[in-house]
Figure 1 (cartoon, rainbow, N blue to C red):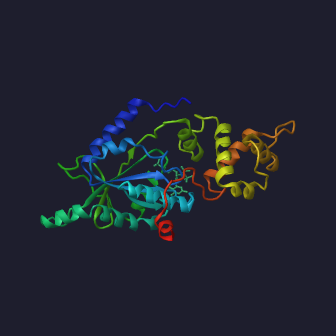
Figure 2 (figure 1 turned 90 degrees about the vertical axis):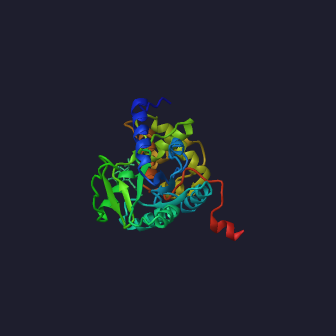
Figure 3 (figure 1 turned 180 degrees about the vertical axis):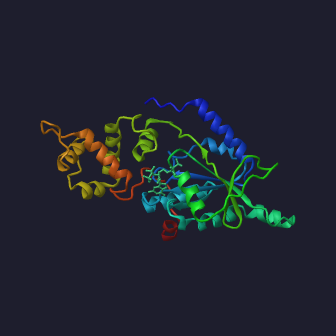
Amino acid sequence: MNVQWYPGHMTKAMRQMQEDIKLIDIIIELIDARIPLASKNPDIDKLSNGKARLIILNKCDLADERETKRWEAYYREKGFYTLKMDARKSGSMKPVVDKIEEACAEKLEKNRRKGIINRPLRAMIAGIPNVGKSTLINSIVRKGSAKVGDKPGVTKGKQWIKFGKTVELLDTPGVLWPKFEDKEVGLKLASIGSINDTILDMGEVAAYVIEYLQNNYCNALKERYNIEVDGEPHEITERIAVIRGALKKGGEPDTDKAALLLIDDLRSGRLGRISLEKAEIKDEEEKEQE
Ligand code: G4P
């Protein structure tokens, strides 16, 4: 796999983030709830410089609910504040403000003791492409939050969006790049559509998804396509092609078409709520039940 992320571009984005982080109290990092490890760039941990951290597991409407709870527990155990959300719903914004206040409680208290009462908590959103950063910012803006405008001296050239009573959000998100430690990370990112479809062979991506579903969400395949689900991934793609009438001129199953169909079904949630990564941890409810 040969993925080029234009190192110059990447360095520039990182440098910009480094500058922006100096202006803020909390980093809101968006990750994809279906792949909470592969969609997180670990470099941000080095940049964060002791700032409060909130991880939002976005697109939770597409992920397995139980797994999302476990991933929240996983990141909480690592010292992050967490939330899950569907960023397209502006109704889910109040919990974000509440969480920011909770994460910055110490800072608020410190300010209060110094007699500083009305200073806003400043936040920025960061994440790899396609996790929903712009969607979240738009939902916040739609909620009626006015732009704050430039503040000479302090935040030169920056636009801030008023978010609730206490928060100001930087209107441009920090863009991070996914880290391709191994091929599997690439396959996961490709499965959910986070990297350009021309980078990887979609037949290979579909084979990866099929094998994962066979092992973890076998019913999803059965119910969606009404097919037998044992066998090699290429046999499954053939069955999908046949049952969906994706045939070549001579009547042969068109497995390329079937692969795309399967991936589209996965991405749009038509296969059900599926998480492609599983946390090796119990969530609070599961711990209580023990
Ligand atoms: P980015 O700024 O981080 O690059 O991501 P962006 O907001 O552009 O979102 C990428 C895609 O993910 C968009 O879909 C957006 O609608 C979708 N999206 C964002 N948040 C959620 C969520 O919580 N749940 C679901 N299911 N989808 C979400 P798109 O295909 O690019 O556009 P559209 O077809 O939805 O208009």
